[in-house]
Image (cartoon, rainbow, N blue to C red; front, side):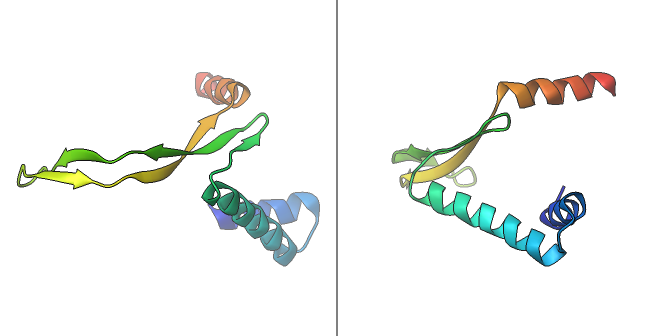
Length: 96
């Protein structure tokens, strides 16, 4: 599912205009992005949680030249699905 499909489904299921559905989806995603950029955690019960993990600086290697390089520290968002969602996905796989 892509963002456009999510907006269309929200509009159809809730009986709202596509513009209103688009606003709701955009506000949700923007709020989540702002929360993560502040280093805060997001938990959506029954779905999963998002957090930002900080990786320290380390020595790496350029795979092409085999030259040793310094890799600077960075932060990456991580998603961990809930137990309920994991079970639901696995049940749907078993039906296929």
